[in-house]
Length: 241
Image (cartoon, rainbow, N blue to C red; front, side, top):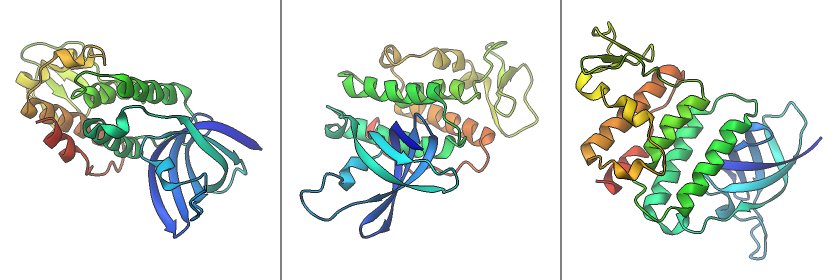
C-alpha cells in the first residue's frame, strides 16, 4: 500500500556513505524508520540538509507491514522554515525538542493530535519575533497532556509537596526521592497554565529555568521507561542565561 504523509524528522543516522536512516514521526504512520539514499551528484534533489532535526517533510513510501526500516519512495519539504535556520536560539530549541521527542514518543501507532500539536508548535516558533526562551518549557508541559502524563494540580497549596511518581500534590512529604519541595511546587499551576503567547511575560532567571527543565525531564523519566540522559539541555542553559 502506498502511503503519503507529512513527517517530522527526529534524528538521522549514517548507514553508509550514500544512505541515511531517518527516524521520523509521521502523521499517517506514527513513529517510523526510513532508509534514504543520498545521491552524491550536485543536481540531486535529495540532500542531507533536507533531514535536519524537526524538518517537516512530505514522504511517500510503500507500506509492507513487517519491515522496521522502510525505503522512501519520494520526499520533499512540506514546510520551509523562514527563521529557525538563521536563529541560534531557535536552532538549539529544535535540537533539544528532537532529542526529547526521540526519547518520549514510543507508541508505534499514529496519533494526529500529537502530530498536529508538534506541527503547529514549530510553526509558531518559526514565526515568533519576540523572546522564545520559555518555548521549550511550555511545549513539554503541553506535550504531557497529549501523552497522558499531565500532572494533577488540584490540592496545591503553599505547603504542599508535589509527588512526581503519582503526579499529584500531597500535604505530607512523599516517601520517595522524586518529590518537589513546597517552595518550588507552588509554582506548578502557573507553569501548567502557560501558553506560547504569554510565556515570555514570565521573567524566569537562568537558575529558575534550569530547575524547571530539570524537574520536567525528571518527571518524564519517571513515567517513560528507559528514558535516556539528554545531551542538549546544556546548550539551552548557556543560550538563555
